[in-house]
Image 1: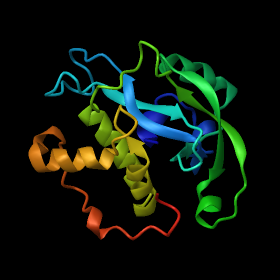
Image 2: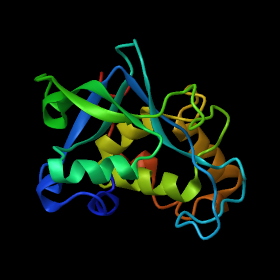
Image 3: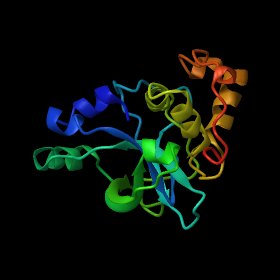
Image 4: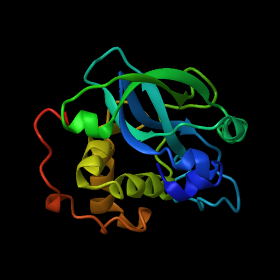
Length: 200
């Protein structure tokens, strides 16, 4: 979702198609296990288990939805995207644009998302989110507005696929706020209440 990150791989033709969207029957999890390397742009976390980056888990439950950004990737950009996203496969997902979702005017289509299988060497169910990467993804969701951000919190999970990410952030803020550089920049209580049926 982060625009600056996307621009490192995608050309302007692809970037101009970015739209907020919802994907169905899928869960967003921090179980992509990425090695901590010296001089990483993500820094060196305090906890060596903090290696988790975003991935998804296909789900049969209709209550599992994930918000994100829908992009029509040009043929010229696709090769670069595939090289960048090492360890991921592409799987089809049912999506609709955010405005249709918000106004309950469903128009569904098929898109593709990156997925690292949970039984592969690229994932782990026992790792923690990489703090600086977590902040980037969280802040990217926040930049799309309070409702989009709130839904991101409600539909993002720890590597176990069960624990909501907002529970982890709350625990970090209370017990070890230094883990997140900007942990206090958002006051969640000031957000608008989400419409019923949107955030479950």
